[in-house]
Image (cartoon, rainbow over all chains, first blue to last red; front, side, top):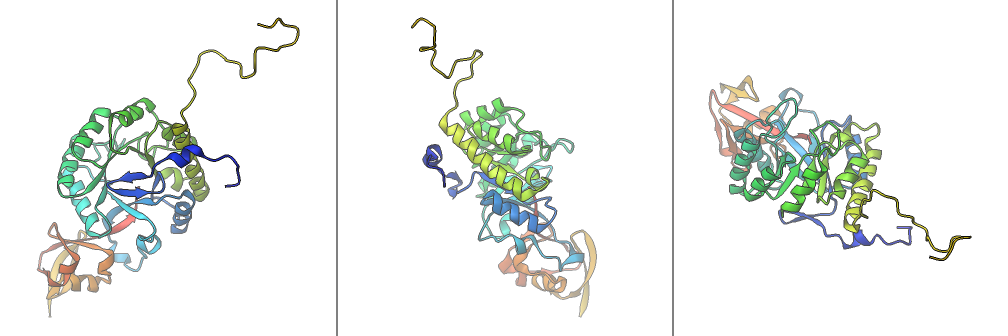
Length: 272
Length: 69
């Protein structure tokens, strides 16, 4: 820190805590779609995330010499958060979650139950059903959901450890479409709120964190950036900046201008 | 030495028998520490791989972690 200004807000912040685990970074990132594993690792390093998501898929039996993801991704360095991406029913998501837990790293699951192929928006009924089942089986459920506070409240009530409302559809890069919805979810729930999906660039991440949410999960914004590791640094700074701005408390919005310099003491004018 | 016909990750394959989940992974050249095995839709826990017999007609899924968001 070369500046003499102390980041007071950052110092007062608490750690992101989900399911009893403390994480250093409020930026969580995916590991999909990178052009190379080297790009992925450089980006993970640059963005400072300590939670990284992974998917469960069949081993390709015809290419068994292919080096697995875990050859690149040290599970002692990063907290592996398995997802149920691609699952379209509660039963399917529960099956994937059980397989993921059996890998032996942790009992966290990023629960996705998708309801529509074109938008990848969640199937709320399936999501609630799968959340109840997995919570009963001892999973720490982070539920990917839409920006609807009623669903979020039901997921919290069902025992989800964190709620992950979308900023905009997965992989769209459209940014934060409903700041009000996200703020409402944050105000009404007690569990951590991690905005997941839709962030496209650093300003999106900053604006999202300024709503007061506890963190952001992103993948495509990094993996499809022209230079993923450079975007990784940008996202780290944006998440930190947005968090600090939220903690600092922004000035009120006004419809009229208010001078920043004194009105009094102007030449050739009477003293007010 | 018998042969078993099983379905592994959706592919019908002939594998040497008698087999256990453990010997099947070895036959496939897979390290058990890096994969999770499901036998007829039931997970086989890693310590049980060597005690879990594979029968003719079994459906086996072998999964691992890949990049994802």
